[in-house]
Image (cartoon, rainbow, N blue to C red; front, side, top):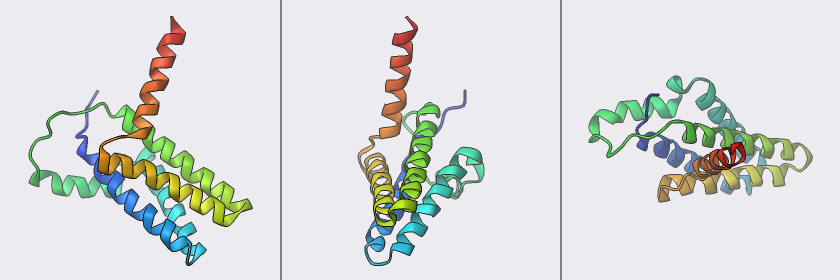
Length: 144
């Protein structure tokens, strides 16, 4: 299995957190802008799952990677990939809620995406990765 530079997902999380915070703030002034940003984030999450090598965040990281020192370690790509699936699920759920209640759905989706991506980007705490590892641990325990 090919391992990944852990700084790549953190860069993506930083960009995502900025977009989500901007969308959350702007949604209070213009709901359409916030909903559009939530839809954009949904597309970006899906893109990261279905075509990660062409994703804009990946291309950006590849362009700055030569300027960085080698990472201290490489990590398993499965937990960050699962975190992207969680992000996609939350953003889709926000869009679905927005069909019934546009304000609640938009703010829910953007708020949860912001918190999770900010934890990853700024505190090196990947919530989706922790969920992945806990599910794997529970799966192993049930298999015994």
